[in-house]
Length: 184
Figure 1 (cartoon, rainbow, N blue to C red):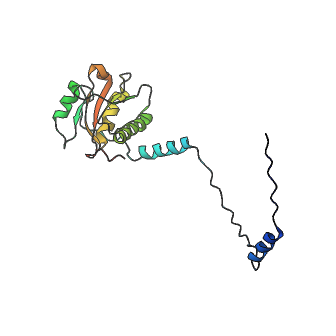
Figure 2 (figure 1 turned 90 degrees about the vertical axis):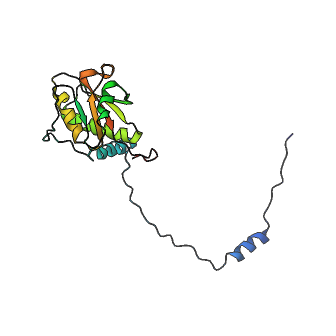
Figure 3 (figure 1 turned 135 degrees about the vertical axis):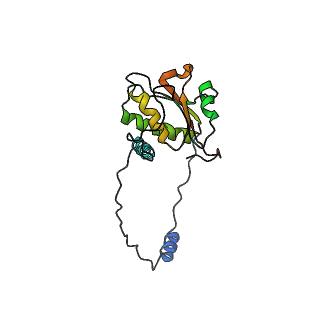
């Protein structure tokens, strides 16, 4: 069953009322403003740029040679920190939550990745991380501890226990803010 609706015709009185209501008005003069469109960047480009800025916040120098022995067991504790931290790292009391594998990296890439790792630790509120540098030609084995000693957020580092890489890896403790709600 179909229903038919009667067409509603507008009375001429309605048109007259409308004309009277808008009498005396003038058309608006359109002021056209052309906005320049900025080139939009992809989200990946923005993230990559932010990552480079965060990594550039700290520079690791090849010139600086700290007074640590990189030929034996790597062991360092910042002067203001508890000396017991190195022993805790050696015994495996701290389990790394982040692991950075540096196999196949050169020194420049290693610097960038170390800075990114430390930044990620602080951002994710991770206090212990493992850096697997390998043994190979011993270039990164000697340079990575030199770079880490220069960073103000590294509390302690020690050669990793066997389960995390032994002589080819280092465990680090990162100095985190006291308030866990604060994240950079």
